[in-house]
Length: 105
Image: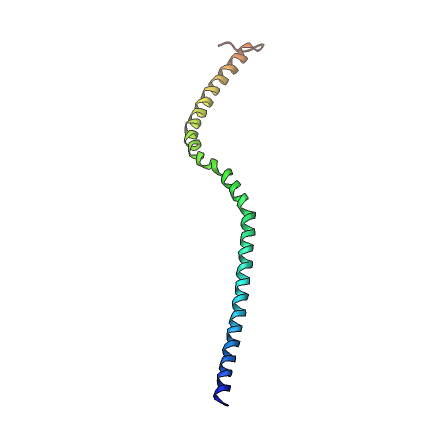
């Protein structure tokens, strides 16, 4: 093989390697572009839902105020229960007195 033939062979091998690397790079770029398009499509689908979730969960911050108000409400309901049972006892006594043959205190 002559020197010229050897140089042509080296150039041919180098060009084939460069062609192979270019094809591989283009294939990778196509896959990256397709993945980016899919991500964009999914983002357009999920973003409105995420905004609605934020709107629906905004009231969670007000739960601390509700929990703080629950303690006094429980105390008030137990006092109301005590008062109503006293009233019920008195009403039952009055009913017993007003019924025919009822006992007199």
